[in-house]
Amino acid sequence: MRSLVVRLNPLVLFAFGLFSLIGSLFVRDLTTAAWAVGAYAAAALLFLPSWRYPVVCLLLSAVAAATIVYSTWRLGGRDEQEALTAGLRILVLAWPGSVMLGYLDPARLGDYLAQSLRLPARMVAAFSAALQRFLGFHLAWQQLDRVRRARGFGAGRNPFANGPYVADMSFALLVQALRGASASSIAMDARGFATAHDRTWAEPATWSGLDRAAIALAALLGAVPVVVHLV
Image 1 (tube, rainbow, N blue to C red):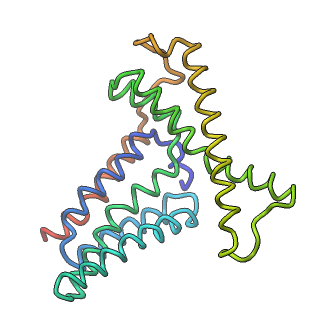
Image 2: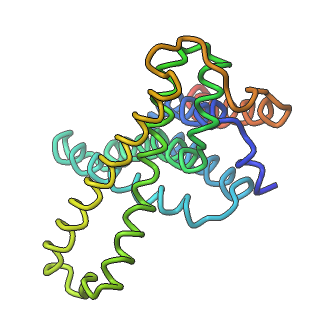
C-alpha cells in the first residue's frame, strides 16, 4: 500500500496541494491546526514509501513556518497562541504539496495537462521539457562533484573555505544547463515543435479507481480543518 503513491497520475498529486491550500484557510486556532497536521502526518505514515523524504519536506516547511511565528509574535502583540497558529497554518499549506511534488513525473504531467485539462499542446510540451531539465540539476550537480573529486578538486571539510568550490560548481552547472537547453531546442525544432499545433502524446491520460480514491482522500484531508473549525 505504501507504493501506491507512485502510481497516481500527476493531477491527483496536485490535488493534495490544492486541498491543503483550501484547508489552511480554516486554520484559525491551535486545535484546528493540530488536527490538520496530525491528519496529514497519519496519511504520510500509512501511504508514503518512507518517512525520510516527508521529514525533509517538513523541516524545510518548518523553516518558513518559524519565520512566520517570529514575525507574527514580534509584530502582532506578542501573542504566542496566535503566532503558533499562523506558523502551523503555513505548515498545513506547504507541507502536503511539497511532499507530493517529489513523486511527480514531468513526462506524465505533460500527458495529463494536455489530454485531461485540454491545455495548449505547445505550451505543455515546453513546460514539461523545462521541468525535466530543472529536476535534472541535482543529478548534474552530483556528476560534476564526482568529476572534481576524481581530479582532486573536491570540497574540503571547512564550510567557510568552500566558497570558490561552490562558485566553480555553479558556473559549471550553468554551462551544462545552457548546453542542455540548446540541445533540447534543436531537437524540438527538428521534430516540428515550432510550427505544429496538434501533437500526439506518449501515453493515454487515464483515470483509474486508485486515482479517484486518492482524490477523495485529498478532499477528506483538506476538509479536516474545515470540519474542526466549524464544529
